[in-house]
Length: 459
Image (tube, rainbow, N blue to C red):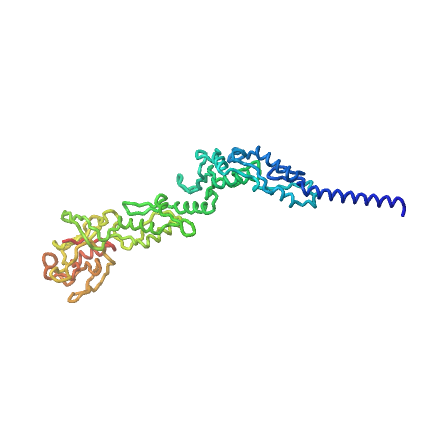
């Protein structure tokens, strides 16, 4: 073997021995010292022994101040003295040194290792609580409670009023966040980033809130006008907004009970079937007529369904309600100026067309002396007139040329078999309740009368 080769081998062996020695020394050294880049509770303890590290921690704790960052770039502080902080060795630092990867010490020069040993930091609970409570951000005058976004009416529509973040802190969470920061040596804590502020539960971009606002605007953007001839009733935003409710899924819809109550109110106000009416007779008397089936009656169930459908479909319109029974005139005076007037006492019938008497006849009415044969008083509606009709009833002549029904079974008709009318004939030759009159007068009425024309009968 040449001398040059021997020298090279010797150098390699020497280098290996030196490297092994350096490595071994490093392992030995870092058995009792912290590795490079070791931060304990926020303090740099690189290359320090347990004793040196604990001394540093003890010295630094005395001068420790925590910066407390609040909302809108506010900043306050709590010192170690304020919270009664002190260092007490509990073996945590020694344990950290033992557990560090000393056999890989040569890889640690570029490392940054943070260690937290809160158990070694003691604090005075009463002082700590007092210090946190004394912060300006914790004072009532600086604590505005958050408020949720909500829907409100503005001008002619509904809008979303944004949430208010406020500046109120959660006392327990704030105290715990600050305490954890002090026990781990952090130099600053941001209360907003740490989630210490109370938050609104509903924000303006909340999906359900946005959806609800759209639903309310759609449902209330309708105007339904009820036409009662000389009177009207309007269902608009002001009315509909009070009918809204949320269903089980949180969507706004119409409250059927509220709509039903509204339609019931219309019926109570505008239905006239069976009402008492003041009536001026042909001879100038003012009388009260009660009973009968003439008038207007809203079909409440059908109208609730119709009104609900119109609102949901967004259909603005002027309409008449669905009626179960109709009269001829829809004005406040629903008898109007076209009607048939019958006086039982005078045995007289007058037909008015638009206020003008066009037929006037002596009549024969029901026999008041025979049970169930007297002609009933009241205000009745005419039905569908019939030409050529057989009047029902035993011992009754039957066939008539003109039949104008009213009151459910009764009618006004001619009487081809009779030559006399009026006077007191009805006391002994009266009908079963129908109204008989001369054919020429009945024909006039028959030719002009419409269905639902009022028939006013009085004593």
